[in-house]
Amino acid sequence: MSPLQRRLTKLEQYRQSDDVEWELDRLLEKAGTSRAAVMAEFGSLWAYRDWLEAQGPGPGLPAKPRPCMPAGAASGTAA
Image (cartoon, rainbow, N blue to C red; front, side, top):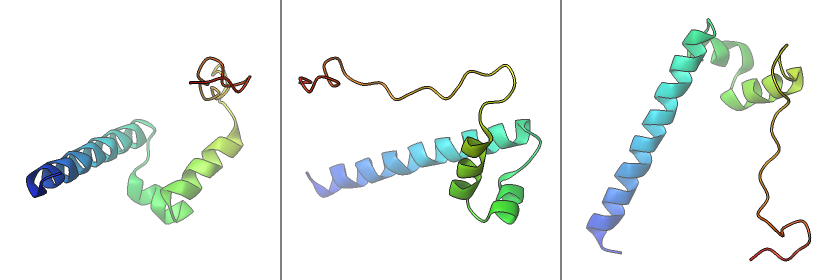
């Protein structure tokens, strides 16, 4: 991989990270809080995520979906 390709790959990773951060801020604002408030109360976004998972699904919400498994993964024959 050329230096230019490596740099373009790194820039794309940063752009994707910025998109995720923007979406997180938007969802937190919609929930009536902010990233700064979450960080002040929980210390990290990981701790907040763990706390949310421990709360379980809200009323009228489905349980957390299980990860998808490729066909045959359960029997050990996945390609």
